[in-house]
Amino acid sequence: MLPKKILNKLVPLISAIAFSASVQADDSVTPPIPGVAAGGVVIDLIKDGFNGTEGPIGLADGSLLFTETNANRIVRIAPDNTVSTFLENTNGANGLAVNANGELVAVQVVNTRVGVIHPQGQEKTIAENFEGQAFQRPNDLVLAKNGGIYFTDSGTRPTKENPNPPVSKPGLFYITPAGSLTRLANDIERPNGVQLSPDEKVLYVANTQGEHVLAYDIAADGSIQNKRNFAKLEGWKNTENGWSSGADGLAVDAEGRLYVASNAGIEVFSSKGEALGVIPVPKKPQNLAFAGKDKKTLYVVGRGAAYRIPLLAAGYGGRAK
Image (cartoon, rainbow, N blue to C red; front, side, top):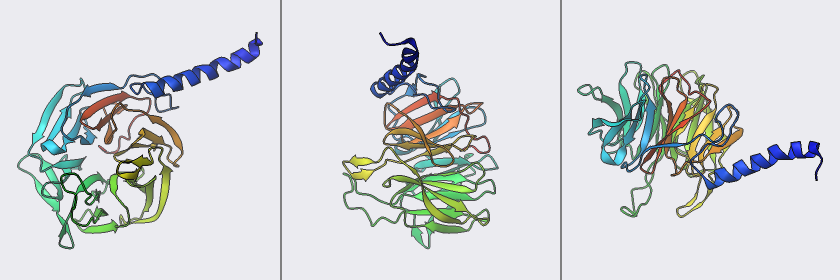
């Protein structure tokens, strides 16, 4: 028999290995991530069968909104998990944000534009083209405290329904508080989720076709500089459509950690880009947001399903997204 001292050292190691194996076999519980997630917490399926799942955003009353882009609808999930329709006929709203006036701002993919879509009767267009060219597929957005809007246009890509789409012109854009539109970058293969650090000194961009989340430093005028690879994604793999990380929606917590929806699940990184762990999700996630009164619930949507994950970490409280 092994000495007691050696057994005492081996037991925690064996337990950790056993838990890791169980997580790999069961993607319905959280793995332990210090300060972020307690191990073994059940990932709660709220509902499946939605027609397009994107753009989640937490509201002050503790509820969550997300977009059923293909159904032209915005859905509300109440704190008690009750699901209801919040808004119909959304012009294909995708990413959502709330401005200082409490208006709901969306990037929209039917008649492509960025604009206010709620309250009803107060809709307005903020931007609908760049240098006379209509946007192709506005994807996500985040609002700065000064009212500036950062948003992505993921461009076009071949599908079974449209194997030969127009030439793709993806871009990262900024609308100043005064309403002026500028293109910040056109060298990202497929810009997707976009997010600000809590201090709004860094802009993060998910590149679906890239191996890394990108980061930029933000200047006083809202422009960006010092492009760099911020975090290497575990989701990077060879798919049926070629190499992709599947990087999509982004969220930040109160400590500045970054959460990324990718092929691997929800990847969590420190504010320095260090990999902290991956929360597996039953279906491939597309987007995510913190919500609830204490913002300690992470909501994840993807492939028609919506989930809630109780966490130790709290989302950043300085803005809705």
